[in-house]
Image 1 (cartoon, rainbow, N blue to C red):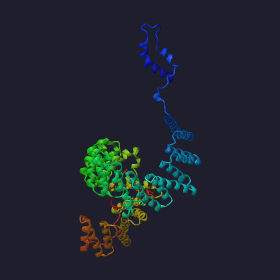
Image 2: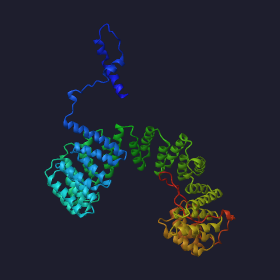
Image 3: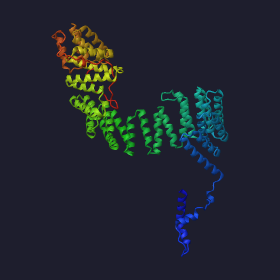
Image 4: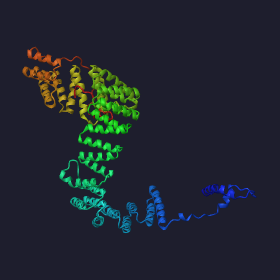
Length: 628
């Protein structure tokens, strides 16, 4: 069929010409099939200009075998691929890189001796190619590493190459690798020093030596300046010889940036940008160099130059916005955030990321407005009411927060149940506690503890578990509810977190409520010693305890400290006046207002501990809670 199609195509092209040669009155009318029959058995030799020379023929055969070999290799037919590559090398022995590839295919198939012979032959055929020497040395160092003779020969081959090609950086590089692998670092350094004595005018030579020297001297940003002298000199020489070669200049600038020489990096980047103003990638590097130097305004102005050239670059808009938001310059961030969302069409994921950024930046009012809009655009997503619980909680808008907790439950129950974890219910319970709805708070604190026991039976994160137990216990103490069960919860929390000042305070307050004032004083003073910053509530508790123990002066001392810390707290000021005037009476422990009988089925689960509740995809600060 293929032959037939070619014949037809040929006939179609010559038919108009033949038609002109026919007599006006033909004896027989012919059609295309007649012409096909005429030419089907005829051969037309190619024009002399298409005849291949011997060299061109070898190249053609080499190319054909190479293409065939690649196809075999891709299909995993390694042995056949090797044979095809050998045929390539027969026709083109100067292909030393292919010889290296073929040798490694042979070695991986267990034919190391054949591989070595192939590389030996390649070197014999290409004695003036540095990489033929490198390939043989590399193979010996890799496959005869456990043979002292093989290792020695690997060094000998490349050392001779260094002597033969003293202006080829690649041979130095390979020998340095061998020295470092053999823990002969000082010899590697000496080799580089020798290489620097050359009168080489190639910037690429000096740049490659510079990168190599940075490895040998292990140059870092914190390196001793004396150790960087050789490396710096090599990069400086590459820069001097660059002659406007932006690739060389950029790599030198990258070295300066990586080693903390930001002014030098900036100068080099600016040199390229002046010649190539549309190199936006260079402008980004320049911005990072300014950032390393700590010049944030220059970072912003450089990034703004990028969006002036490419206003559709959403990533740069986001970077600028992030810088503004970290600096609490939220109004300046807003246009860039809006631009980024416009460019990217505002997916739910991007809205969520931006909402998290606002929350992390503690811009809670702004985040409420933004997340409310996002919830309108994506009414089926639980992420936005979920994030609103953080924003509203931090603003202490508890009733609105509870509405968003409920919306999250309704939306996430089927689609994202992982949001409804113990951390979620803990914050939900705390919102009810802040509103004084203690029964609802208790319900969800118990739900939290059930999830802790279910999800983390090994108690991997005691801190979160202790926080939950302490919070519920303290809530009961403060409201004279379930005093004994509160004490058990707090004791469990104290066992989990014995060095927590807040929990020690709760335990001391439990003893106070029970009238065990000596134990209360002991725990409360321990709480005072554990906290990093003075806490007015703890000071007030200590003062009340000393008052019950009859130590009026110490009680007054602690109450004064509490008032100094929180002068707006009328309760502290009132109590201090009563102590100073001697009006306060020592009384028995306050009676419980309500002691709930908890059925056995509702008893508090064992304190198994729990990791911090799973946060949204990026960290979100939880609203402050009363107790740790």
